Image (cartoon, rainbow, N blue to C red):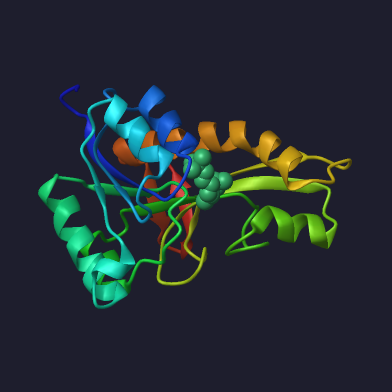
Length: 206
Ligand code: GRF
């Protein structure tokens, strides 16, 4: 790990291709993945973390009286691991406000649409059902809403002939795998700031 490496945690629930992109690009360079937490036992993403000797933990909703208690345990573990940025990479649970307050302006998410279009679950299916021809990816700060936080990076792709979620996902994957590490790099170098005249707008230095 380089001296300026930012300790980050990655939250997952599934396949973990975005986690893999982080492990293959920023890990050991601008950032160090110090923890991977999953909301789902046996998520393939956990194997990707273990293969790089990154500590993993599973936080099942069923093991706690409520979401707040689960999030509290999660936050305690992430803090103990030293995480200073929390990256949601296919994490399929909502985080409660007390969790977000423990990591102020330091939780980011990757979403497979051009927000504010198609937030929430099944974004690609929503976009196809709407009949759009331009699809895309957003990396944004996480607030208490569903995919409502300030936009950090977005990238679009024209797919006028797309008919299935699989073909859209295949086109979006490379965008996600480029944008999420890029957002982590920018965060790590302190290059992301809220515009004082329009706090929702994120200004990128340099
Ligand atoms: C990605 O499409 C991401 O945009 C969404 O969940 C998916 C996670 O994929 N939030 P993976 O587990 O990183 O492969």
